[in-house]
Length: 244
Image (cartoon, rainbow, N blue to C red; front, side, top):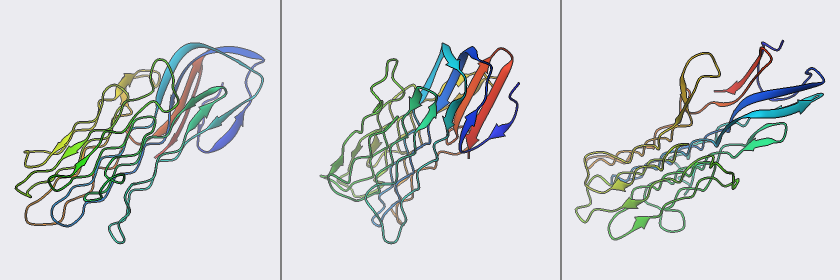
């Protein structure tokens, strides 16, 4: 029986052959920073989410746990946050989430990075817009995640909100200048392999623009959202690997 909580790159000895149900989630993308003139940053995209049954594992196999991507610093600001790293269970890979775009950068920096789920676009001043990013960069079926939202600057110059990063079940919400709230992160997916229902791979929320201050960063993917993990459930064997 394997019951340890482990992190990093390891080789796991198992019985000669097992058939496993698995859950693999990659590291999430970092969030974009906010910039002056009330432009919010884009939320980070969730790490790719892959789960299925009937995976045959023979002998020893390798687990790689992908780390989450770093957010962009406010000084000096950079156009995009870092992508998360891939997670791997034997032959199964999940792609790292896309980094969110920082507020106020023009194309191509205005759009979040592609990834397992795509990062959200940063807030823009009219007439500039941030485009949508793509998810499922691994080209898997079913898809491992969805794209991040776009942004549309307001002519009033107020509340140029960032867009949400994509999640494993839906695209990130768009950031609309002058709206009440920034773009929401895309929805995650519930799974019960850990013994209770847990929602994984939710996208980060876009940063809020503020008429009286600099825009704020998109939310970091925290808690179950940011974790990169591998869960293997078979023959009373449960392995959980995570990086916060």
